[in-house]
Image (cartoon, rainbow, N blue to C red; front, side, top):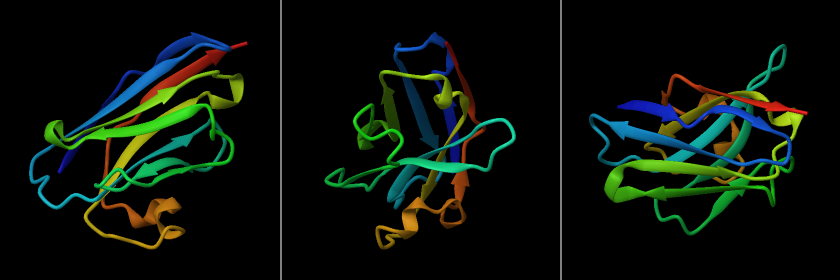
Length: 126
């Protein structure tokens, strides 16, 4: 499975961006899709995740109410709409995927995911 993230860029504080992550290859059975981010000098952290059904969404407290994750299973693509961006959102954003179907707390853990995209840089200027 290959994941290709796109949509990053430079935006002013308060602005919006929409990230996309397209999956290709042997995508059959992919269940959870997620987004993580890594800011300079910091560890990679969970941002959001969505199960295949799309019925339940998971967010880090720091982005809840500002970010929205969604997926289009027909296109094997997951999206992340990011609104009200601030300087603390500056990071490389990585998309991830797995065929597993974990408990809720596990899917916030980066080690749980099997496939990763190359990352897309989001820079928010204050």
